[in-house]
Image (cartoon, rainbow, N blue to C red; front, side):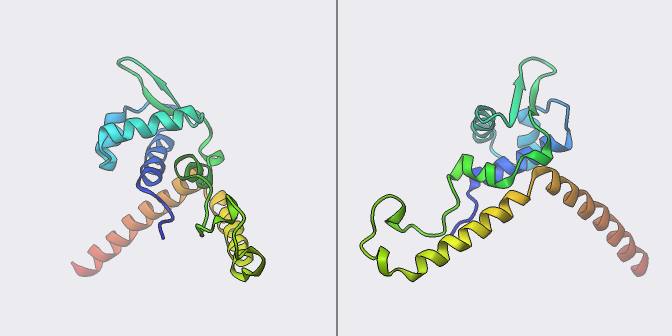
Length: 153
């Protein structure tokens, strides 16, 4: 089961770059190079993010893409839903048609409960939170690397 598709992964990575440069325009080429995302693929993702109001663009020499919202207000659930639709753990047809086993399907209610939990968790993860976590990891990684180098030499 895939929880995140490549489109969603690339979108989150692009939003993290933009969030790290909040208030500044960043070129799609720079995002592509930094994140290893194919440029044309990234442009389509950025267009979709723009349609949903998450980013804005500016043409010209000092143009590029910029977050259109506060990073703390962009939930990962929202990004998932833009590129994948609602988070669903089952491909049961009960959502689109009446399933012949609906009355006797005890698993259906458990799946729906789990989907609610997953959606709540994804809602709590924002681009802003991930940026803070990334800073902690990067500063902790540097400290750990210094400790490692100091102990070995």
